[in-house]
Image 1 (tube, rainbow, N blue to C red):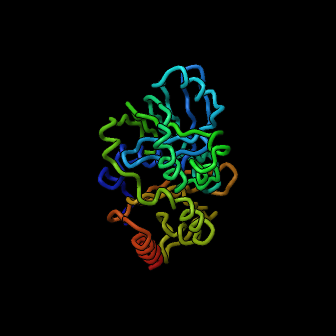
Image 2: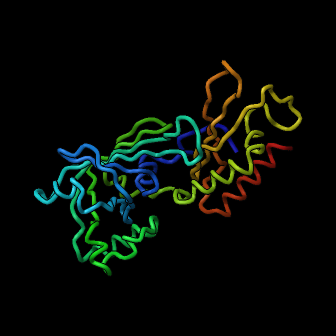
Image 3: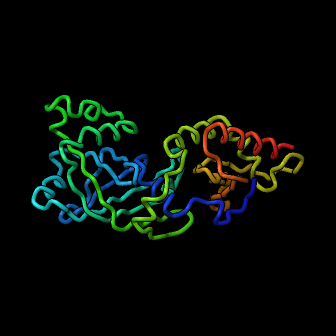
Length: 262
């Protein structure tokens, strides 16, 4: 394990954008005349094109009726699943044009959305007109992608975005972090510099919470519970090599915690 974070040990800007757009983070759609329209559920197709579940009565759908290719921006906010102050970890903005998914393709798009968001209106799409008539699915063709997070800001070209893949843990990150936070806070604390076995622990003891996870490493939020103490800070722990699945992640954690206690 390493506490450094060289470029080869971090996701690329395109990968980070694909992970943000995957559909776990909250999305808001903005079109001319409608600056803020919450997206109840969204996901991406294989090329990263966002598919957006929207109420048929949304002003966005009304605006689209008069303009088949409507300029739009999908704003995505990535919020840490662990309850922390300052929980926003990153943002993405996908600028392009929205269209309504054709009726012949709407069922397939709804099924793709339902894999991540098993909402009743999606599961019944195409089978019960009274249900899906209240909803529609829009597609966003992205022409420019912006990402802003702990690594800084970047603009991603559409081709680079489409060729990238989302992080393999994006769909389960919340459950993994929740488990670490509820069951392994003491082990996480041993990962801080100066907290190895045999060293005199600082007083007061720091509080360490899991903040983010990807295949290259994880972020920890560290704070000192002392009035007037230093501000919380985030620490990046880079894995020695990328991990691809949950079994690999378990092995990494076992080695990481074992190394901190020996």
